Amino acid sequence: MTEKKAALLAYKCPPESRVSIETALAGHFDLIFQHDPAIFQTEVSKRPYDIIFMNYHPENGNKFYLLEKVQEQTPFTPVIITCESEDSVHLDKRLEPIVFDILSLPLSPGRVKRTVRQALDKRRQENELAYLRRTQDIVYSFDRVIAESDSFKVVITSLKKFAATDATLLITGNTGTGKSFLSGTVHYNSPRHDRPFIKINCANIPETLLESELFGHEKGAFTGADKQRIGRFEQADGGTIFLDEIGEIPLEIQSKLLRVLEDKSFERVGGNKTIKVDVRLIAATNKDLPALIAAGKFREDLYYRINVLPIHLPPLKDRPRCLIPLAQNLLKKSTASLNKGTITGFTPEVLAMMQGYDWPGNIRQLANTIERAVILEEEDLVGLSSIHIPELGRTAAPLIQVTEPLEVHERELILKALTENLWVQKDAARCLGISPRALNYKIKKFGITHQNWRKHKKE
Image (cartoon, rainbow, N blue to C red; front, side):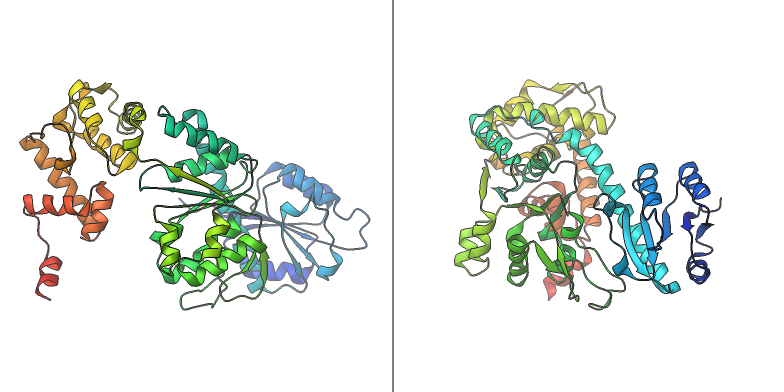
């Protein structure tokens, strides 16, 4: 099967511009050139185009009449305007969203190719964001948040009020308490709900790449920067950006972040063009930011700038009335995703064990434990034999007797996690939802070894 070409429609394109477009895009695009306005409108309405070029003449009495028609018929197709002088084009604000760029003549094939690629990349990002909004705004609802414990009811009441504002929100709490989920809930219940919601975990990105990830870079800004990159703040323009683990941001990048919050502007790495953005920031951390300030690792002025609306999420052990409803909800999700709808609940022994355990990994650990149990369980109710709590000394229930088949599955799960994480035990433990100490215990128990570990020990 031959690959479907992208489609480009050009209106009143001068001969030299047509040559440049054909030289740059022929073979990759289905190119249509029209000069008649009626036929042009028919083309726009009868088939979807990926890019539209429109040549602009100041003496044209109708000016942007056809552009208005394009916006009505295909509002999400990027339009590139060509003209003798960019200064002669004065767009009505209603038409600005559909115009990707304005290029002055003469066009070069390289410029055509670069602009079209950037327009398609931007449209692809918008499609992905639109998809995420369609799927996530159903999930992110305050009505779906399980808040049975009084301490968490107070949190949700505050977040509902905070969602209506544009102020910066700082969510603190232990790992796995739901900071990421609740940041999305705030966004999708805010006035910005139909604009982008961009999430970034600052701890997962190498320090050398974090600035580019946040603010973008220009071509040639550093080794490997072979093209311009739009950063997360630009992608989030008009919407919300969620910076998880904000305490991991290096000091030199913190100063740039502070400027974005105060002036709503920045420059891409390697660039000198000032970019303006309108973004709401939601930050989250499990670190003690005042302690980081005292240690000289976090800017005090940035802390006060992000701590406008502080909210602290209590650990799961301090939400006892939420535990079982959460477990039942997570069980329903796991059985649906794993196609094991015959499992309808937990045995009384499992419920008692859950209530007697303090869940140091919070909701994330509970979710991983239940998902693993659903994979192993063969009965209608999840029993103790399918529940594995790694830190057995922390459970109030009797020690669980593991059967031989369960040990086999457990060893396979550990090997799979180690392989996928390049045998880095800390990363594999995080993937499994257990502590590195617990994973090390299991590795010794099952006699798992790897040549890299032996190498490091000798060194």
